[in-house]
Length: 439
Image (cartoon, rainbow, N blue to C red; front, side, top):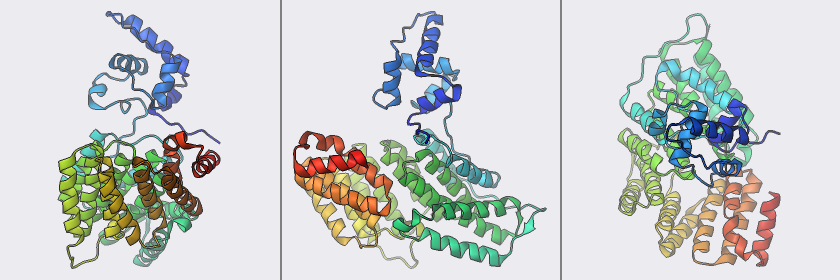
């Protein structure tokens, strides 16, 4: 089985067929050729640290890496490290000319070995601004393809609704069916002949399926593939003129940015999404996500402002049901995410109360969410030094995650292992760490 590539620098080296030693040699050659006589200070150990996310190369080292790869130096000003390296993934722009291409790229991305890549803050900001300001084109379809009839589109929509509504423990077994369903819709968009109204339905269906396929990859830790699927979802939601669905995709991007430790990259997409959606449930979720981003970035006032707005919106009555992408949003989600914000801001006692409140409100049907909520509770126990309680909650979350196949939740428990390591002599902690070693 292929080993997943975990850093853009490792991926860039693979594209060139270079070892870490080869990169060091090319950096030294670049340093020697510069009139100021830069010294690299780089060796194989330094490259390994960069590729394990343990250290960021100095500005001088980045210049030499850029020269070694032939990257224009202007890219270093536009993109942060390591997103200017060769193999960088940028989202496709919006517009009907890119809808099918975005779907095909998502299919290819799901087969790639790189799992580290997320779109840069610059790319996400530009894409979300384009979505907020650009009106969709009028759709055109192929004139030489076979006709697509309404009965077929009805069946595709009904089947897709059944697949995307499955609980997590079943969906893990049907992802291939979902991929195949999306492939069928893509084939129809690419080679079919259909009137404008059926084209809109096909694009909306492609957006829903691509969004769900993206979430499956996200749960597997395949962030590059998730982002490319969401690019396809956003492009097709825009073509269908479904602004609510597009806002949901921007919220997905924002969640991913927070998840991978880049909260600042989440703010612009959420701000643009808020500008183009009006349902109170959607606005509550978008505000809550932005509050999480602000809390992770240490922006206390902005976080509390958005939490207040989210709480107001969730209690606002609406004349229509919420969009499907946020129909699950409830006071339980609001309570737990508010608690996570408070944890990030250092208010552990109040955070514990909000998280406990959310767990009590969460219905039993949402087990994957319960697993993530439990880990928020576990982190609150860790912060207050209640190690046995934290281990018990983490074990409960691990049991649940393994039962339903939620790899992302297993990864979350594994991420807590260093916090438990000093207490490995405690029986419950030792058992948890042993399970994580074999998981």
